[in-house]
Image (cartoon, rainbow, N blue to C red; front, top):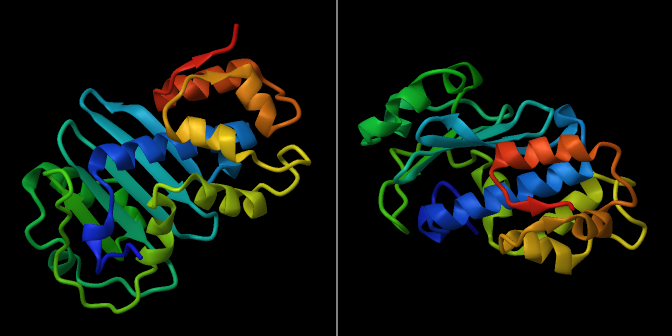
Length: 211
């Protein structure tokens, strides 16, 4: 299983970005209210950076920054004590310092941190805690659409069609296919605000065609 102790099991930063966008699209379909979503993505975090956030509503958060090259992951599990951040981020490239030591990461906290500046070469600093909840948080990035379905079926109970969240549609979104109204309605019976979903997809930076 992928964790802070086994960073080599993570996908490439581009594959990770694709999954982050896909699960944020799916969350936007299943919950039009942003505050009830688990995953969200902003492809215009800055001129040259994109941003992903996971929040469980109970205090756990994971924030991921995608600059033009590489990626850095900051995880915070509220039930675990925070380790020495300087040790945890030892050898962190300078390009990630503003994000990891600035806001909102600084106020949220850090219980695990991973980064890469080269494809398929993830790194960590000095790990002191045996438990940091990283395995549970990073599990969604295994590249398997069924992993999202299994999680969302419980989390978004009663928000999707009675037949369940369709694997075929989720797989298409994982593969970056253009989202259509038919795909949306395969997931939910009806959508209250199509304009809102368009705005969400634009913020995520995901292609759609609703005509």
